[in-house]
Length: 195
Image (cartoon, rainbow, N blue to C red; front, side):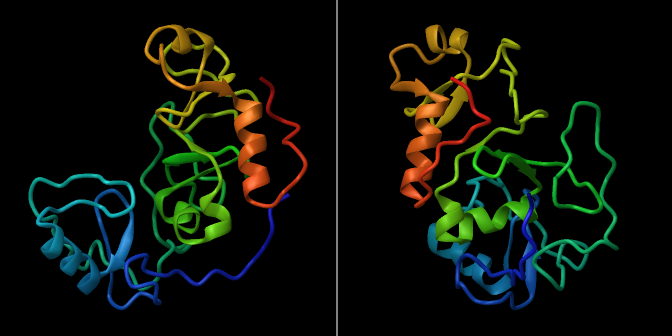
């Protein structure tokens, strides 16, 4: 069940409504002056949210600057490539960049921003995009994701637990999701996650 709510997009640097919003190549948006100052202070062109690094200062021209924080229905989305997952909130079905295990939804960069800005959503467990959140599979081994690596903060399969994540702090997805729900104030464990 998706809730309808009014969301005013905010710049996550100044926490104000966007003033001359600028979109980075990774899709995250900030006030033009805020991102410029952030890069000046940190001495590198890096996205404050996803930490994407840009070796040279990316151009922030009219083609990348939008009047609102979230893409409108009229804005054309590039067609999805084979295997890409669409955003569950976009009428235009933009490419999803993360999936949320608490919401059981996948989001494009613009619709993911509330998960970085709102404290309650910030506690949700974000994972790399998966097609079927009811039964996500490992992209490396094709096996069901049943474990959570706390060391790397990612969902993994049993095979990953024995190889790439050997020696890491690993728990069941169900246990981690329950912990995240308790932290966010919800008491019932998620019924769709098995592990």
